[in-house]
Image (tube, protein in one colour):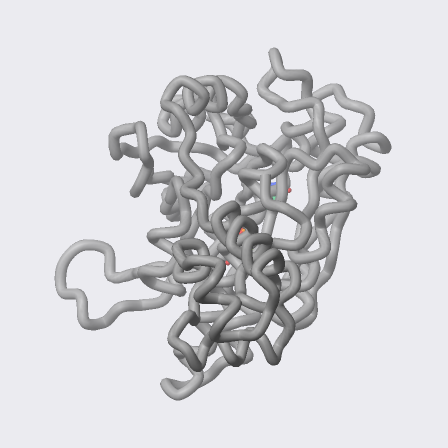
Length: 316
Ligand code: GTP
Ligand code: MG
């Protein structure tokens, strides 16, 4: 679990102020690793701090740079704690190995009206079910960046499932983000809410639209990717720290350069592809049918299934 005040720079070490850090850097001791492997006498000599202070800084640097190794056995134990949220469709659950996993980021991408938001609604309801019914006995946090959250739709899905719709609505916290800064801040400040409300699912719908609208043109591309990257990184930390499921939606853009296959690629490109644990591509079929393709998963084979978006939610 990450510490409250992580040691990332020389100045974060005990007894090292900006002036001392400057002196150390000038002497070429400019990383925590270098401090961790220095002699106290050397540090003391180049920076003027006492031998004792140098020793303290060295052990703090050693602690901060220790490799975070975990035994495979304890990793297996952690895997056993992984929860899964049912999507409402048995076929889709099977395709992805039992449901949307905790301690992971699941990305669904697809065109307009393909059903990404509907899938999110269903998960926000299902996470509240008991474990044996496909839920996690938890609540949901939705970051709504497009103003498409519909409580009446949630209520309808919950009622049809025989749940107390008032309670279901109470257990969904919604944050309407109007800018990418607000979106990022909501996730940066989510710790308290997660603990107080037993949040087991965070939905970011959509992950990319505000970034896309705000950072226009080639010149802004780098900044956009950097911000998105840090946003996703923060989501990944929350997923791991609290063992919660992260579900993000993403639009696709036409890729006219592609001659064969489906000429669409998710926005955000490679950064997202590497950050998401599981990637699903959803597309329209006849009437209320949708085809979901498992594009990337750490432990399940690629494949497809058909789901239906109905009045009662997501079904086979
Ligand atoms: P964008 O956010 O625009 O990219 O689309 P999306 O992928 O989020 O689409 P969304 O999940 O909003 O799906 C919209 C589709 O869901 C509609 O075109 C309808 O076909 C279907 N839908 C939404 N509400 C209902 C409902 O109450 N009953 C039924 N049967 N279908 C619904
Ligand atoms: Mg949507």
